[in-house]
Every structure is written in structure tokens, then in C-alpha cells.
Image 1: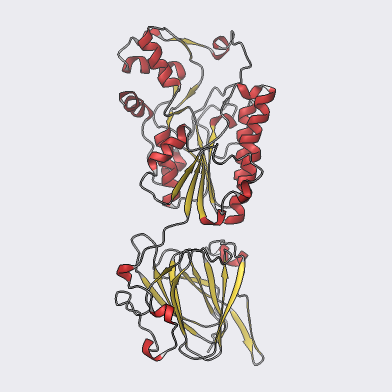
Image 2: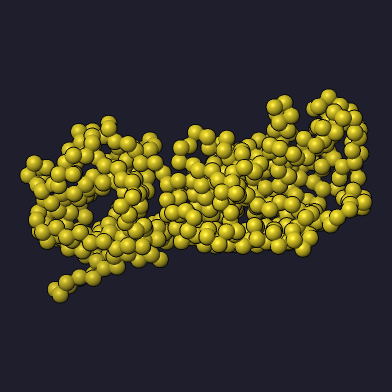
Length: 469
């Protein structure tokens, strides 16, 4: 019999993401009423805002009707409209809880949230039982399922009614034992801009992950009007945007301004809408250029935007678009060094060729090596860190560009005094084209990323390692 008057509450099942819910049911001699799904109340108590798009009903007229064990590639909210069922859930996802079992009886005063990849099976305990499930993807014949045999000896589910006494379909009887089950992989991860400096580092970081796809700008252009339809976006759990327009000085020209806004804002706004609509976690890489650099101390994540030039303005606008996505990580970094042409390689080359450079000494920051940024991005995704903005750079004492240049000379076996420090104004005084304003202070506060359990590597150590490679 349905229990009336319970408080709305969640119950841990021991299987990550699988949550049993006690539902308030209000009734009298006429019948009963309940809020079967109430987004605001339930998400406030910790339920994932999973965005259901389809409502299905299963009616079972006989006691003992048994269905399962099926693991689908979507999340679902299962509840009972009439009658009573025994439910069994088995984690069929890759990971340490693969094969873990949870069972419970469900009547109208209970519901359960079943995440993607957790196998579920139901046995009716009363005649004329109907259960309802909301799912966050439309059914597709091309969807990939994972199955487990109802009688698997490892799961050892204690069915209320013996399986040889109930109605089961031939397909369900033919499902494999646990030892033969292929675990369901997580939703795919897509890395955009995979041929850039950070993109190449992400390729190396996720080389062991078969569910990660990499595309270059030529293969998927954020500025394309077809962006919403070029992928079946519901198949993706994470999108990492490692691409951007980064020609800081060229952005100050009429053509560069248009290109910068198209790449860093317009395309990002469309991508943000796609991520919101499909429940995707969007990882977006930002820049110290969203600040004017006049702050006396380190820049925290919640500092108000104050960009100086076009590039910084477009990055700030892109950040604002990404911040509207419920599941977002904005990774703010500075002074990026990776494969290919960059400041460190240029200084090392000048040292070898006997050139004594003049280098800016009134801008301060920390180098951010792309391998370190990629490691931080993976940490945020896999640790389940709270969504939001995170600064990721190398650690250690801030340096000027001239100070870093001197250290490059020294590590390369050359006299660091060959580097002459000059002001930003003097350095660009003879520039032939437009020059973007630079923030004088690019030092980012790393306390928030450290609080997630990530330890940034000292930038000086990374520089030494980089030059030895």
C-alpha cells in the first residue's frame, strides 16, 4: 500500500549517480496526488538537471512480468503510476563499480533516477501495474545498449518471484552473463581545435581514452551555420574548445576585428546553446587579456572584466556566453607555451644565433605550458569539480618577459646579461602595424584550482624540462 505523507528526500544506493527518491503522496478516500517530477525542488536537493525530452509508460497486466536487465545510453527517471514493482539495478559502466547491484521495491511514493549505463530490470508485484519513465534523449534504432542476464550468478539478484515462474521475453533470456558483458563507455568527448598548441597537448593527454574525438578547425568550424547539425550532439558528454583567434595585434585591424569576433564570440555563442540543449559539459579556454592588468595582486576568477583591446574584448564576450551553460568550465590561463613557434623557442634561437634581444620588463605573469593546461582540464572533468571558472597557469614566482628570456639564455648555456629589459612603450615604438594594448599584470590566482586537488607545477621547473626536450 502506498505510504502517504513522506518528505521529499534522496537515498544513496552505493552506485554512483543512481539515486532512489522518496516522494510525498497526498491522499484520502478519493485517491491520491503527487508531484511525480518537480525540477526546482528535486534539483535543489541534488538531483541532476538531466533535461528529459520523452515520457514513456509501461503497462503490465500480470503479477511477475519481468523485464531487463537493460542499460540504455541516456538517463531516465522511473516512477510508478499504479501498482508496485521490484527493481534491480546493476552498474554496467566502465569503472570500479562495474557489476555493483542495488535492489528496491517501488510504489507511487518512490522513484529512482537511473544514469546512463546502469542496467535496470523490473518485476511487477501487483496486477495492472504501470510505471512511467522520463528520458533525456529520443529513442533511436541506432542507439547502443548494454545487457545483462536476469539470472546472472555474479549479480545474484534475489527476485521476489522465481524467474522460472514468471513471464520473460526470449530476448531477455538470451542476454550475456556479467563476465561476457561489454561495459558501456561514457558519452564521447570532443576536442575542437585539436591541431593547435593546446589541441596537440590534449591529444597527448587523452591518448589513452578511446571515447575522445579530435577535430581541427578545417574539420569543424565554429563559424559554420550548420554547426547545430554537424554532429549528433546528444552522443557527447564533454566538448573541449581548444581553438580561438589569438592574433592579438591583427585583431586591431578591421578584418582582424571581424575574424576575432566571429571565432571568439559568435561561434562560441552557438556552441554554448548546443551544450545547454544537450546537457553537455563545455570546457572553454580563456585568457588573462579579459583584464586590464591594473590590479595590484593576483587576478581571482570572479574579478570583473576590463579588457583593453579587441582580442580581450572578444574573449570576455565568449566567457560571458559560456557562463550561461549550466555545465561549464572556463579555464583562464596566460602566457601559453606549447609545440611550435613561441616566445621560449624564439629566445632560445636568438641565444644560439648570437642575437642580443630587447625584451619587455614591465609586464608580469607566469608561463602556462600546454601540457599543464591539458592536465588541469582533464582533472576538472574527471574529478567532478564544481562547474565554473578556474585559473590554470604554472606556479611559482611571477616573472617579467625579460626575466624569462634571461632564464632561457642561462638554461641554453648563454650569458643572460645579453638580454636588455625595456618598457612596453619603448618595445613597440617602432612597430610597423597596429599594436594591441597588453595587461601589465597577468598573474592569476591559483588557489581555486588547488582546492580541487590539482597541484600546478612550478613554471620554472616546466621551463627547464621544456628546453631539455
